[in-house]
Image (tube, rainbow, N blue to C red; front, side, top):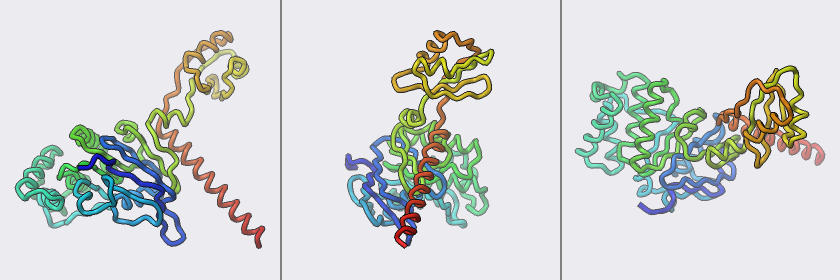
Length: 322
């Protein structure tokens, strides 16, 4: 396979009538990475993935799979799990997995062997010859996931893979993603559940209202939110005044605990030392746990607020023109 990045999208825009589903999206998924594609429902994630696969054509911009426009040859190296689940109800799990593997170029014998291997791995051997219509929703979803990776793709795209799975099967899928990555696959998966991204991803891309609002590592995402420490004090001590004098100017009080923001270049130990030097009667101290959910809410809220501001400005401009 070519050494080009599995997926490159440059300034891609997709419209449906007057609605812009994806706006000026640039995205690069490097070889060997696990990238989380995050956003609320309606953020443009599924539309972006369909353009990545050539199912939809962008109205503007360019999409490249392994250095070229999506085509039959490049798609043979891709495994895709769509958000909309759908399997042939009268076929068996073994037959379906084998069928999809053969569509990607595997021989009949190799595809059946691979199907048996995957079904055993996921604890579905006893159901391998049952009709899909006889399986539970969770089992059917696992079969579709296995069908997407049966041919050992170089690049695996999973659209909301954890949706509908119970916690046990979600963990099983996380383990499977890790195994595929160890095998050498590059993985891009969309989700609106931040915990999966925290555990699995090298980097993340966040979407809101059709626009990219963040693209970087988890550490960079946490840095975008801002770091802080939580300091508990007694006797109604005015920690805000004391910390402001020491160069820590953004402090919020929650009962007897203060949230002290860390300026650039200052760490948790600097804040603790400043509080001690100020004579604060400290009862508790801990760095604030950064959570991707908080970063996500902050960035998405900012994007929605900006869209609202632009919409109001546009309406005002129309009113003045009239």
